[in-house]
Each structure stands twice: as C-alpha cells, then as structure tokens.
Image 1: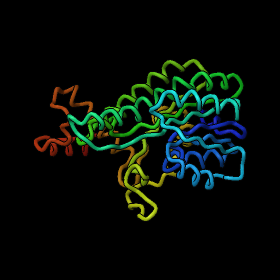
Image 2: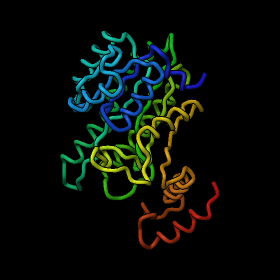
Image 3: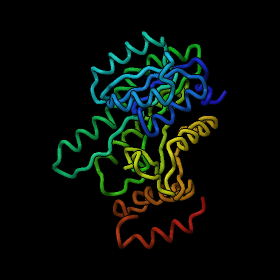
Length: 281
C-alpha cells in the first residue's frame, strides 16, 4: 500500500492555505477521491469561494478562518476538527506568505517566520496526535509545503528563504521520527506555479512557463504513489534534471569552500553554468 492510499473515501483532509492556489488544488484532488475537507485560511471571503468550488452543499466540506501564526487558534481548530469529523487522516500544512523586506525590518522577518515556520510547527504539534490516532485504523500522511528557495537559496528574500529552509529541516526530522509508524511525511516543493502568492490573479493570464496549481496537486499524488518524501515539482521552464543540477552546485559551495551563493555571483556565473551543463544526473 503506497502513501497515496491516504486519499481514501471517507477520510478527512485538513488543509491550511486551502482557499486558493496549491491548497485549493489539493482540496479538489481530495474531493475527487471522496474525502471530507476542513479548509483553513485567514481570508474568509476566499474560503467561501473555495467551498463553493469544491462542494458548498456538502456537509463534508467545512471551512475555518485561522491565522496559522496564532497558537491559541490551533487549539480551537483541533476541537472543531475532532467534534465534526472525529479524525484527521491527511494534514496539509500549506499556508505561507512571501513578504518583502530587508535587514533592519523586524516586521518583515517576524511576519514571515511566524507564518511560514511557526505556522507549520503549530500545525504539527497540535494535530500530529490526532493524525497518529487515526493511523490506528486508516492510512495517514502529513504534507508540508516548502520551496526551492529553501534549498538553492537565491539572494533577494532572506526571511522567506530562511523560513522555507527551516521547514525543510523540520519535515526531514518529522519523517525520520515517524519512520516506524503508519504516518508518511512528504515535503512538497512547487516549481514556478501561477498562484496568488506568486503574483497570479483572476484578471491575469498564466505565463506559459508556469504550472497551474492542479498540476502541482497531481504531481504530489504521483510521488506519493511512489512513496517519495521529496516532491520537487518541475514546471514548463525548469525540468527535474535542471533542479537537481542547481542543488548540486549549491551544496558544492560548502564542499569546495567557495563563497556562498556563487551561482549568482558575476565572477562565478560562467563556471556554474558550464559545470551544470556538463553534469550528468
């Protein structure tokens, strides 16, 4: 039985950031498999629209307005979830922000880390016991949304990169700690995806190079069928092979004692490009 068995009729998925983008796409995937939903987001209007898209007339779809950075809100959500559904089989910790700022801007760092990092921590600490209880009788899984910026670390948004790098580490440790249980863990790393977080909107057309959110959800399902932890999504411009070459070059900064972030340094860009072009994956 693969990890994708969690997408089962009658099981319940809790999805943060579930009102739009990748979260909503995963919600639609869950509904197509006959699952019940608890959609969580801080945008009440977006939640109403999302519920209409996935089945507003169904009592199997419940929404909850929540700021994932607020720990007290999570306890109330746990009470709501267990009262209405009894169990949570799939926990998708997807909510995130992409604020902009720089050194000296405390709000930029605090907002980013409280949402992207502590939002995940709060979700794990609050709902892992609920998921593990469900695992006694049904397949269960935890999906955590990371970012390629948390792996290759491009310059320009230190707080976001740091938050997603920390999320990657947390997901890896969670996977290790649950390795002998019946709960699988997966790090979902979208590529260029046309969502509200990346500047997409209802009045704009998806760029040719970007994936749509449903493609990310479908890729997640495929990788869970293969029992993969790392779900590193390509897009229409960047292949899986290219991603792997970029990751190898980045870790080479440490191994070869180069300065950090050499892929973006003018004096190293040519060598980086030539090396990645020759690298066999």
